[in-house]
Length: 201
Image 1 (cartoon, helix red, strand yellow):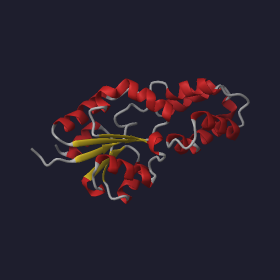
Image 2 (cartoon, rainbow, N blue to C red):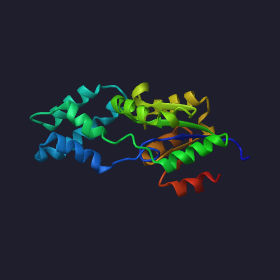
Image 3 (tube, rainbow, N blue to C red):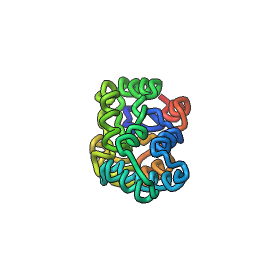
Image 4 (cartoon, one colour):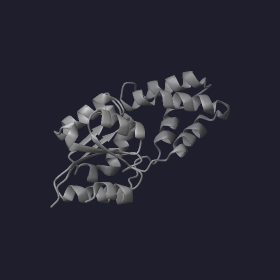
């Protein structure tokens, strides 16, 4: 068998289906003030890292978004439901591949940016395979989110590995670059076929 390796995977855009612009479009429809969509999008993005890292609650996050975007009214529970809708659906082909790596003796970890409410939904729908992995590190649980240095350090500690012995896989270049700065090996994820080639099992 090939030498045992340790892989640290992102979730969204890699193992969990990402909705791209459709996610924000759902939020904008729930808000219902189309003339303020540009300001809404700016506020939504600028505050997101703190939400993912659990440094602000969901209610505080949306109240800040409302203030920054100058919204007249905001039903927080409605926009949260729109924001998170369907964001727990896994890419089964990717999950099967990751589990096949695990079955061959490789160690597998997760490092994902995710707010608390969505993390609960994710676990409810994906515990059968997440529970089989060696470490699952979610930003909302550790007070830090990628590309922040602390997030990588916590994940490495959870895996019990040194940075140079771990390969990090993510679809976002800023996270890949941050991981490289921390000394991890990296693979920029663009699809399952290219990932298999990069790993060369």
